[in-house]
Image (tube, rainbow, N blue to C red; front, side, top):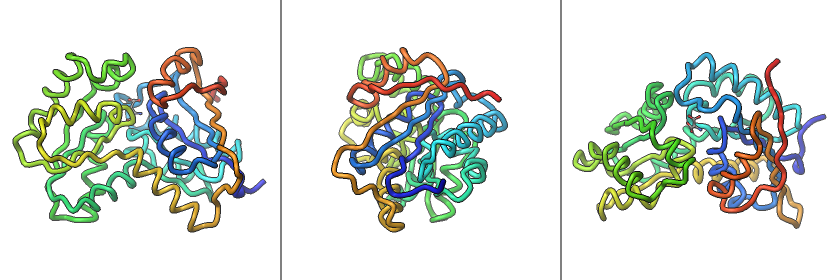
Length: 271
Ligand code: DGL
């Protein structure tokens, strides 16, 4: 069965964090149905090898294809960094969007020349943001920093207390005095720290680029261009599939999404 306008959009992530992307997609495209997959049995991806992330990503993409989605959005920066080709292949004819391509475009559109990138170890070590940015403009100056402590802090709900502010100021200290004009939030969890990051930069004028918003805008324009927008006159439905521990996902979902997630199902992927 081929995909059509009323088919859902498939979004996936290593776990809960990709709900920041689902939230942005729901805001940009309120009539779209969404199938979200969070690999809660195997999270985190950010400290895993490229080969492992590729294997998991292919399995998830095949699942989304079997659910007859019309588009696949890679919400996870670590997957976007090391496995987008694998996902594109597994998705066959379906369009595949990812947070790194979208975030990179948004960064270029700011017109800023000195760009900071923060993300997981997998994302920063892959050099994917830097490579994509330089492909578009080789005069850019790019500085990257892995911030692995931020994922557990976000999941604990510690995004604006003194531990969060101290951790952020240690990670971002290097950016404060080296002329960085725009900062890419290159991890699903980092949009939750937006206001704390602004505090850490005092009131210095720094543009914060949220890859979640960027990929949601890209999805809207792609669906519009290909006449694949869902035109139903009711709000779309969000169904979440997780590979483990749906109860914990439910508890954390509200923090990431700003509302409850009623439909959470368990889906084991190992073959
Ligand atoms: N979703 C991951 C990312 O955006 C963060 C969590 C993890 O390490 O799996 O890179």
